[in-house]
Image (cartoon, rainbow, N blue to C red):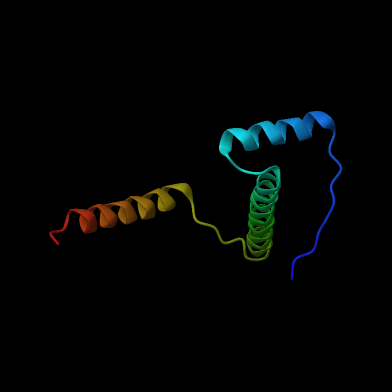
Length: 91
């Protein structure tokens, strides 16, 4: 189900939407829907990552367990080497 939501824009913003819509051959409505969807995606991703970071921080505070820089670099290098080997393997 779709509903209508109003938004009040100043004339300058409305003119910018109309001008950009004309350049992109899209309606101002399309531009606004796209902008809102992209904003929501970005902010929801940020909130998910923030939640994961806070969970990791709590886990570290409780356990004290961590991976040091040298071990992480070694692990990432091994992953990269495996990916290169797979990419170079004959198909």
